[in-house]
Amino acid sequence: MTSSADAEPATLLDAARSGDRSALARLLSKVERGGAEARSVSEVTHELVGRATTVGITGAPGAGKSTLTSSLVREMRSSDVAVGVLAIDPSSPFTGGAILGDRVRMDEHVLDDDVFIRSMATRGHLGGLSVAVPDAARVLDAVGMEWVLIETVGVGQVEVEIAGEADTTIVVVNPGWGDTVQANKAGLMEIADIFVVNKADRAGVDETVSDLERMLSLRSGSEWRPLVIRTIATEGVGASQLWEAIQQHGEWSRSSGEFERRRTVRREQELRRIVNSLMAARVEELASGEAWRRASDDIAALRLDPWAAANGLLD
Amino acid sequence: MTSSADAEPATLLDAARSGDRSALARLLSKVERGGAEARSVSEVTHELVGRATTVGITGAPGAGKSTLTSSLVREMRSSDVAVGVLAIDPSSPFTGGAILGDRVRMDEHVLDDDVFIRSMATRGHLGGLSVAVPDAARVLDAVGMEWVLIETVGVGQVEVEIAGEADTTIVVVNPGWGDTVQANKAGLMEIADIFVVNKADRAGVDETVSDLERMLSLRSGSEWRPLVIRTIATEGVGASQLWEAIQQHGEWSRSSGEFERRRTVRREQELRRIVNSLMAARVEELASGEAWRRASDDIAALRLDPWAAANGLLD
Image (cartoon, rainbow over all chains, first blue to last red; front, top):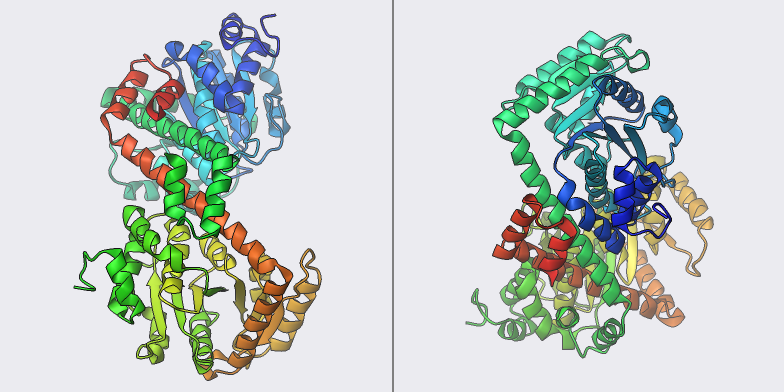
């Protein structure tokens, strides 16, 4: 019964820590559903978290993020570290941990017990991913994944935010001026610790690298000068340099205090988002209740003004 | 002391109702600042509201909305009705009821006691306008304005929402195919009760009108077939037809029940927004408190999980 659908989070966690992948998938589904279920998972994982390092990977659709992630996972596995991948797709109607669409490129890892790949979508709950992704990363951390890669499908606001809230953030672009301009517009210059110019066998790669270097030289306010790595992800070219760059950023980040600073900021943001999501749930509950209907009638009849009615509802 | 800066809302309201424009401006400033000040104004105005009819005017920047509004005000004044204008500019750093920028075109009305024009901006408070604009419209209603025109500067999401939540909504376009396509994209086809093709002395006006008619013929689900009016606002051409169209829509709306239906929906939305803004204010208050700091420390030390900490803060 370790991984039956209604198993307790504690039972599922024990099973997942012993290598039961279906138990792990069920824990992540609970996290994805939010609310009381997410809370029940958070209760059992929280004492085990804090060891995994997170890496955000973002960039425009078609930049080759998925293939790059796959080649990075292969490289990391040759260092024998356990890796979890969360593939964030806000617009996808599919969820449930299946290996979907682009995920198929990660097929080579499905038989590797120390790699776990999961697609996450919103289930229509705006902003839900901002709460669910850190929760899911904590689950992967608690079951012993040493690294958690968080890959976004596009560069929407929520996706950039999620990728930016990692210990190390990688921004993937392709050769061509348009890409770096778009990256700049989407706010990616600010969040990148490492730039990857993927499809580096294409024309214009040197110009793109120097464009990036020039833009980065204008960036101020940080001691870290983002690294620019060339890759051809389909052939695995550049993956070892990228893995080295990630470790290099990690060392700098830990020794400079940036690592701890970011984690503190992230904890604050997470707490605030969870408080806001609980508040929103309470408003929804209020809005379907009898008191709300009465308040609404009182406003219509000019017996109450909207502010007084709102205050009355909250008290 | 009727209109001194710290006067009570009740005192200001009495003064404003007797024609003191500076008292009216002060009431609107209180509304714009939100929170307790907005609430204090809402308390004194709410028994006097419900008589004014609101008209939303939206369309792309440069469509001539401001000039059109001015020529409409002139037309309405010839029917001797009292008119308030709220010009919504989410991005403007200027506030405070001054006649700014485009407002200069409304100069002709500044000496008319039965016209009051006010620019409103957000003061950086996202979504703040969605609460402040209906509050401000209620103030104008309470001081005796029979009509309140709510004119947006652009077609951003909040602006479209605000203009769409009026008793009658006017969408302004110019001759040229691009405009109607953009209007469609911005969700303006759905909210328009009346289309104005302004700058109707320009080439392409006939095509634009037939494009609109064709698009409107595809619209289903409403008994009201939006009117299409041609204007040359700079010369006042079409203003009387527009004023007639507004009254025609008003008659249909009242007799069909649409008027009351919209007002009910609006009251619900307003109540929800005010509840949300009060909730957000409570989260901000919480976040600056001692309990929040302790919760944050407990999460960092793994003594509490974020969900338990959030729940603890809310209880």
